[in-house]
Amino acid sequence: MKAFVLEYGELKLKSMPEPKPQSNEIVVKLKTAGLNRRDLYIPNRRGSDKEALILGSDGAGIVESVGAAVTRFKEGDEVIINPSLNWHENSDAPPKGFDILGMPDHGTFAEKIVINEEQAEKKPDYLTWEEAGVLALAALTGYRALVTKGDIKAGETVFIPGASSGVNTYIIQFAKSLGARVIVTSRSAEKLKQAEEIGADLAIGTQSDWKEELKNEQIDLVIDSVGAATFNRSLDVLKQGGRIVIYGATAGDQADLNLRTFFYGQYKLFGSTMGSREELQQLLAHMEKHEIRPVMDKTFAFDDAQQAFDHLEENSQFGKIALLTE
Image 1 (cartoon, one colour):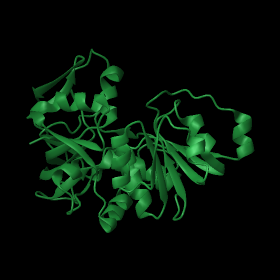
Image 2: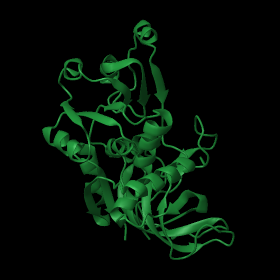
Image 3: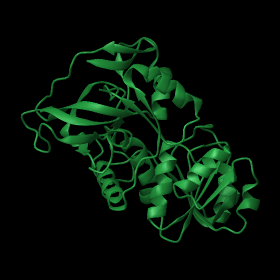
């Protein structure tokens, strides 16, 4: 089968052996896969001395074959892949054995994937294949940050530095569907407009004076994935006693924190990453109830997988990037 792999430090299309299911596994013939920023970091993390690894964490397709002990699915079922491995029930932190699909296990940038039946969910009927293929990783990350950790309530205001990432486009829609007020930032006037089109109530420039822009707002919750560049600016606009959730650090891992300011403000700080199967099932039910759709940026043919990577690395996208895998 055709696959997009990292082999001895090089990204390339390659023919790989077709997978066969063990007793509790299913083989899914993938129709689409979704790119995530994680995919960009794997080459540096993995090094240049390893054999071919199929990249990719998100995907959707049709069950082609099932192992003898499989009970959840049958041949012909339409499914999405859950990339959050070995994390079934919601918990304060991932259990021992938690991992993310696409390293060290083979991922979704291929014509087929074999995976434990517990790592798939029924594809929502109302979603296109492109939408279903980009759903799980970003939506699950956003749902846990906003709902499980952030504990957002109707009538509260959430502030999200950065409007255009796949995760944040989900958070905007989830927050609005839960009755919250949503404020976002971006350097791009076009992205600010796009954020408002999907539900943001207020969109302000990244380089603007946030304290001045938001002086008449009460920020109950901040969800920040930028990191060092925005952490203290976000804290400056958060109400005393407010909550801040960090799920990423794209602009730096190390942030200075004035502990006296923090404890006098009685702030609450939470870390978050990915989520459990239980949360994925909850968010799928929520999405179907409110007919929430992934925000799509661009779809690439399988033969253009490198172009899709390049597009993601440019950081010009708004929403998710899909790869047609059939």
